[in-house]
Image (cartoon, rainbow, N blue to C red; front, side, top):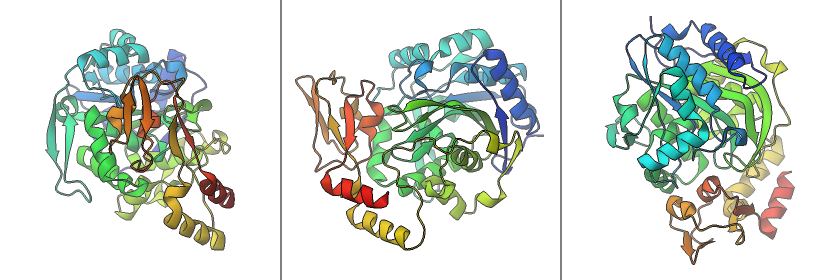
Length: 393
């Protein structure tokens, strides 16, 4: 019998030391078996969208995308169960959602080989349609890519990374990839702070209700993720049906207080889950925790008492001054225009093959930084911002 999506707050935690296919297959199977087996989430004959974190499609060693060994492990389990599996995602907002770009991204991320080895298919349909969600708190409808709309169920297989905008990206944030590429900036324009953006992410997850969440936390990304950070070993595969519960466990593994993350707060406040009720099965998370996992440079950390109140007051009054501002390393910029296309407020322009940023218009969403594969966009604080950062510690 299939589980109702998201009702079970158990999260499977399984040690996985590396990306050997046999080791990942065993870890993924064990994690899902701890939750009742793959048959608890899907039925034979169903069309299942397997949704990885593709971003722009980069080599697995850069730890930007979900590792192909983890995607293959899930695809194999689903195919063995009799599902028709389609691997698909819409790359990040600075990339045009076209068949040519999908083919390039799948090849770089290693997913072409996954499809060949497992019998899964790769999505090349770049259509989309509007899905109504009248129950939404901040969003009543979404434009969703065709394979997600037409699937009987969605299995999300995400990558554990820090994130400059949402602090962390794992289960919840990964579903944003089913919004067509160049429509993503619209949401950044509408929801200009991390908390309201998190409200939208919860609406999206409640609208589409993925059946199963699996996180590739074998090697994550620390620092200024989701693209410009550094690989860091965590050695874990996580699995669960509730996106907020899975992300609660992931946050604790990398030393972030879950209720610092806007979308986890939103899910908790709506009564969709209680962080205190989340429990793990499998390996002890304490043996896998990485408390010194480097946070993004936008992260202020948790404070208490008077210092916390003063800190919050400073951020509320001078948040724009405090927030790192993007700048262009001219010599590294190749004029690809990804930053220009993704900017929700048109603060980036590319002239004579080089990008420039109008800081007066910039809303500090860091989409340009996220999409720059050349690391040509650097984030820095001005003197006042450095002073506030020093005070916040």
